[in-house]
Image 1 (tube, one colour):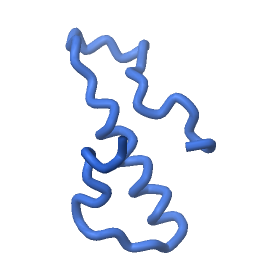
Image 2 (cartoon, one colour; image 1 turned 90 degrees about the vertical axis):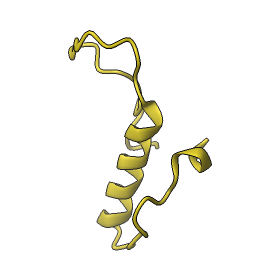
Image 3 (cartoon, helix red, strand yellow; image 1 turned 30 degrees about the vertical axis):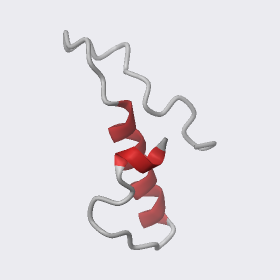
Amino acid sequence: MLKNPGIGCPDVMDDSGSKHHNALNQVQISLRELAADLGVELPEGYPATPTIT
């Protein structure tokens, strides 16, 4: 999370008109990318969004 401060915050430049934003989905994607960069293979769907908080 230190490498990606603000991860999960909506992009103010992306005005899609939607009021809802899935911040935990963005965090999950970031965690999976970090794991891949470190050579760690995670099972599909891991980490589950309810366990991120």
